[in-house]
Image (cartoon, rainbow, N blue to C red; front, side, top):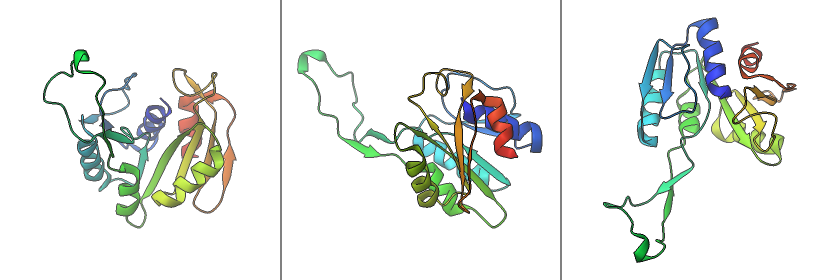
Length: 178
């Protein structure tokens, strides 16, 4: 995704070198280290740990916004009917990094949106206390998930906005660094 391409660009340009995350559709060879994590709590702890000594933290996506409140100890049987699954929010990794940010550190977040892209991205920028939000419309068929290209809008905490045309995700990564 664009997040891996962006972080790959960061690695190439300023030697940020740790990718934190779990399963991904694509792999990147731009990192000299990978901090694996399977659960949202683990991803949060690894992000906070690796961000301490970094200048830029680029965080591409949430693990998930919600998780089941209780984990079944055994397989749920179809014969028992459709189960009711109660959800709870996962830790907000980007907000935790925004709160932990020290002077001189920069946090770049991403907003995958389906409607009111700029409005939702601007709200996320403020709520998460980050320096930049890179927003994309995930309903677009020619960009975003499942493609090598993306079209994004970059918002900054000073009120600036830059709309980038359709380009490769790697090019988006370089544009963010510029």
